[in-house]
Length: 440
Ligand code: PLZ
Image (cartoon, rainbow, N blue to C red; front, side):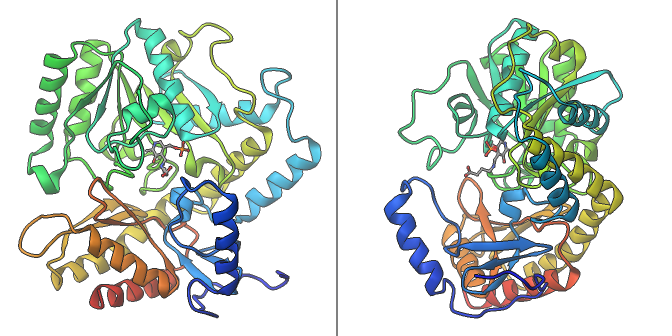
């Protein structure tokens, strides 16, 4: 297949979804790839950028997923493409622990500047979100000399052993994969749509559980806006009250901003919406435009508690990924993408709220910036309706719109467009969703 023309920014269906070439590739996937790796939408991509993904059959799909909140600047952002090409020509790897290079240091400097708080910070780079969360906990344990870690209901922190323990949902993430790491405890979250508690009351409930059942842990790890768990925005005051409790008790407050960070929510980090200053911030996903990179950034005295040689990994802060990250940051800053995320919220949330007015199955519309969701329920109550979420997303897929579901009950449709998407594409996508609701 030749890719000579520019990628048109308009939805276009050349075949049914999936088309014949995608079906052939799916048959090969089934023969060659382990069954445990799922597929949201069975079309195979050939290129992507702006706000669309083109598949092997020539269909052009509107991207409301960004590869799960990764391609925030777009999937082929010019600065990222150029930076990676230039770095690849210079060198692809030396290992930062063997012969260091400037890109890693420059990314650390940027993260130290961009994460909340003006205190002295250090950063360390890894490959995946899960790896960075694990390392944040390693750091907090050494810094405090304690072991216990508190995570929250509906949390998602990854698929490695320690992060599976932190993740709440059993199926599909944990089922059969135990035993899990010890010294992980769970506290209740603030879930305004379902618990009706204000932030301070929800925080008191959580702190009570922690004090009575755990004592003083090494760390609390929380997503400022929950991702896989259902795009749950805690009630105002919940996160600051937890952070205050952590400060008063010498507990490390770790913000997992893997999904909510890097301009996604209309702030550089979602913690900023509540003036939260976490001790450690975990970044990944949007940080490097799709190249594997993650980071832990935090207070120098906590980060530097770890002995030399205690942190690292062969690929952590790979030069290609660092070059991409520097280009991502430049793109966000010079193209005003934090503001763009706020505009996307205004445009989409308004449409979703209007949809909710006429449809009692949309129980809740929530999220910030370009991290928005609708929670679907059976009319007349709040019983989760995962079947409806499946039906609406399947209908949207058939019409060429990539949407993802999430939530503990699988009943949340989430919208994570790249910030490079046009208003026209967003409007078209909302039209498709509106029809998908009407026919589901
Ligand atoms: N923390 C908040 O959202 C990854 C997972 C998709 P990795 N979320 C997408 C799946 O089914 O595997 C995530 C996250 C938060 C940590 C992670 C883990 O990041 O880069 O997938 O390891």
